Image 1 (cartoon, rainbow, N blue to C red):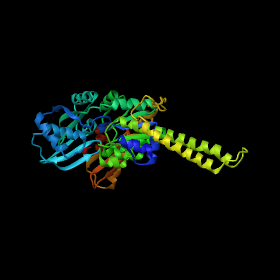
Image 2 (spheres, one colour):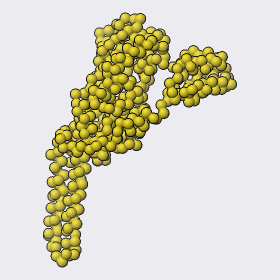
Image 3 (cartoon, one colour):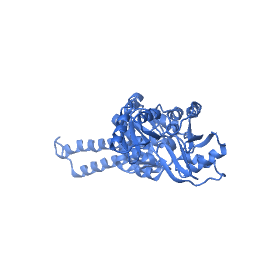
Image 4 (tube, rainbow, N blue to C red):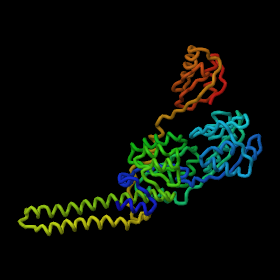
Length: 432
């Protein structure tokens, strides 16, 4: 196919003919942030320790982040080059939240403001500082040792040089653009404003990206553009998945189209080429139809004219020649030139897109370690007490595991949950 050949020469790989056709029908583009809109090469900008030295905070943070594959983790470990970093044990990555591991008998935990604030009480000053850094487009990473907050490290990523241009081109083609990220709302909004994205969905966990794409698909044909392991489910869910070639192998495998040159403008180019190919196919169908529409009646003698077989063969050859020459015109398409884009009015407003996402019920879970439960009857008491709390959707308790798990439909403070349990004369050890 000529279209896929043109794409390959420009670093755009269409895996199937269906993906070449589907890209041109796109109405919504969902973009991952890190590594897609931004460079994916963040740098440490601020180190703010609490009760320990800046050097010690950096060593502990780098020890924890050393086993993580996230770009933000790499920024921390690069900043700690030259320092003695100790290998941790029992390392666990909590997707969309943070990390935890053991170091010399201590439990290290790192992650977002929301994640850490659920584990330890943070002062208003710390929260304000984190919010300020986030509003500057930086990502604050908070760390704690055992049950004590030890400091904050801010990391900033820069948007790609061509991101704003690519987003502007997509909008000019009548495509609504949505940025989906796990970052907090302030950081995401700052990056979105710089890139020109109005519709930003922040605080999305990895499995939430595919749910967001599902919602967008109800509004129109949706492409998902991503580069990381966490983006793979969303790439599969989308009508067309587009992977950045420099990203993770699993993302490349999951995508329908691969952008080999790591340029976001190649996304608009891929859509532009798809539209040109569809238009070319329609033109070829016209030429094939028009020859048959005129020549078949002649061959049947319907007009009182006898058509010799040689003339029919010549007309057939001419039809094929026109179709082939028209198809080859795709080689002349300038896929990075937006001057001939049809300026279509966007079919989907930001309110339609983000409104339905925000109306989707958001739930979270908390685990409560409880002392004093001895039997199923105790479990029933705890379950009833927790489910009576406003914002608790459901609860389950186990006296054997000495814990209860609550599913929340609203943000419920740990103190409220603790009070509900201890009112039944059980002791709450911790909540996470």
